[in-house]
Image (cartoon, rainbow, N blue to C red; front, side, top):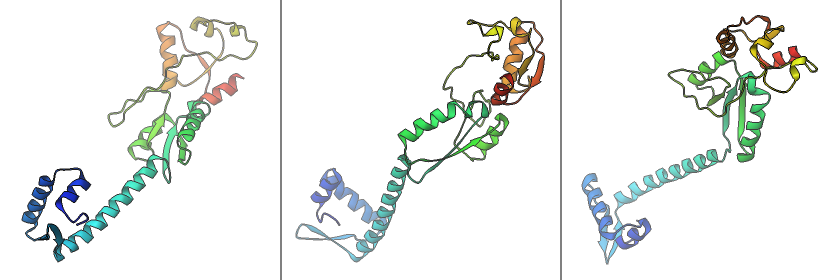
Length: 220
């Protein structure tokens, strides 16, 4: 209908002319109506074809609008990216990641939440957000974890403490001092508890705290 001829349609679609003719014949056979009349080598659309064409145009414009919307989403325009982080990495690692995300998608709107580990499952399964950044692998049949980095276990001590000398610190040396740590029943706390258990040492926490920022402040 746009080109007026089979050859013209074939050029527009980048296909062979016989292929266009076969498709036209098949369409008319399936629809049970005549779409074109042939006149002096040109195809004149019938009234039925004009009716179909007008509706196809509406569909085409809606598809074009959809593609435009998808392209804008790819560029971060009008989209809101909802995600979350656990507190242990929310104050330092997360802001650096957000800055890089902002540089790549300057128009992207973000909705960031801070969650406890046990809250992450409901957050994702209820589709409140797309991803949760964690410092502990969470095993769940409905979720997928992707490792992004590996860190080391460190001891934090007050300034001018005798354990501030460079080099590794043994668990036996740590056990000589009052310890501030995370509940051994907590996923993070269990890592430290397992290390003490393997070393045959008792983990005696004089103060238990939940979040890394609190631990930092208490040690200071």
